[in-house]
Length: 110
Image: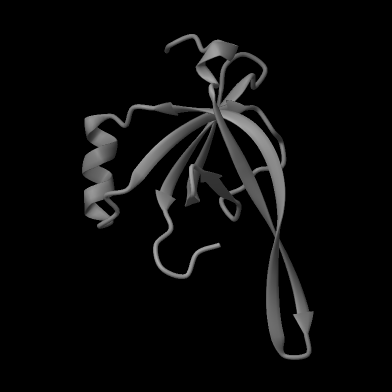
């Protein structure tokens, strides 16, 4: 496994935490923003094949510092693109870093 360094996190990104509220019979979702520094990591050929199986060509893996609160219900925004978090993996000794496998949101995203 590759050792990650703080210098690998050179892209400003925003983690979006969903907050659902009910207004009568209507559910409204607002997003709380958490600014982070992230790094893009290459997708392996196996992961690319899995992405093709899901018809999700826009799969990106992001590296961020470890957080206990991030789940697959969150989203990540970078450079005007919004990504759904598909998978969260904790890496390193004592959870120094985590990877977020994400799929680009198209259409009616955030």
